[in-house]
Image (cartoon, rainbow, N blue to C red; front, side, top):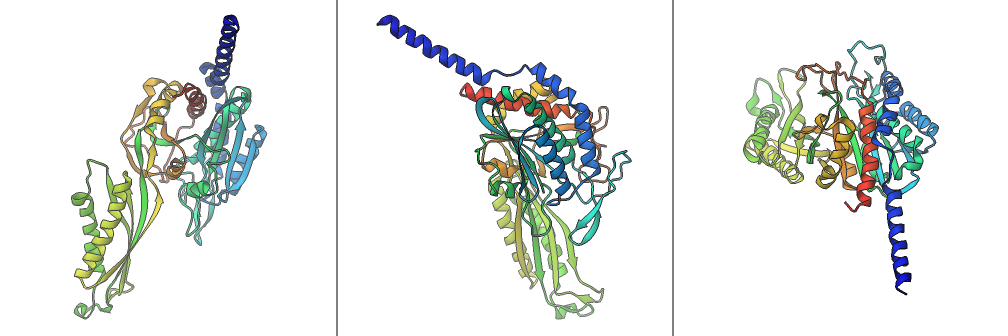
Length: 440
């Protein structure tokens, strides 16, 4: 009887050990890195093709077709037409494990490229009724390339991949045109984080001011929410020579602009998190000798704390209406939230930072301060723990204070080390599964 019990216990232990080994065993880091490095020519080829053929938000028809064709050639299950032009590929690994999502964005910007490259964009397109130049002035072309490389590498070792990997190629990160829906919010709305349900999602963004080969991240709040606001100030029209017969909306609107900055300097708890309020547009009047009836202000709000975001909204409304009334005018305030705070789950960051260090070298990975730029990757974080990080694209030896910024005609990134992104994504997939299997 005792011998039978001991044999049963031994058999159970052997089963558990075998099962655990089956879950966490993975190709060596050196093997993954070697495969990623062998993909460099393809990564550059894909990136430069996409760079030369950019498309605006919600219009990424040819980009999506190009991506889908490549993904099918890797043997992946591909879905198209998600959130208008989005593409999702599914890789079902040969071993049990979690569902991990990896995301890249695909859209370009209405910017005219000034950098003289062999693959320079000369594309034009319609944007809200205007013909505009189009350029990948934010590096989304590199994101597509790195995620395609990850998909090809993992597909080539499918039997060793734990769980399921979702490759998300998202349109309209820069914001859909006009009143259209789009971007990550629509991807989430259409169920990209379900069927199968995603356990964790990772994303990256190339940076023109971070040296190539380096990775930067921040735990918790990383990138700001983005709200766009309009303030319509209504006064009373009069002849410009007799302002006392009317109510000047321009004077009232100017006072509102100055007042808004005191929300930042005098009402916001800045040691807790930054707040930015910028008025970027001021429209009023048609002739120099007519005091107009209306003035329109448009601008953006950036916050890194959701409670402060709502407080700032209320303060803007109160400030604008209050100041307008003192001038005998009225103010109507409308605020439209474009993105949430991009929040990196602290537990996930702590767990997975070593994976980034393995991919790029510990000396090349560092934590940074938060960023007032925004990213709609934030919407995926409402459905699963998320981790978003920066990857360097600045040529070595460049003074980062002189590196051309994103969304500018001179934007430039070094694409010689895109394999770092592939290594990072692959490492995250394998390590996350291993650590989850260990109960971490």
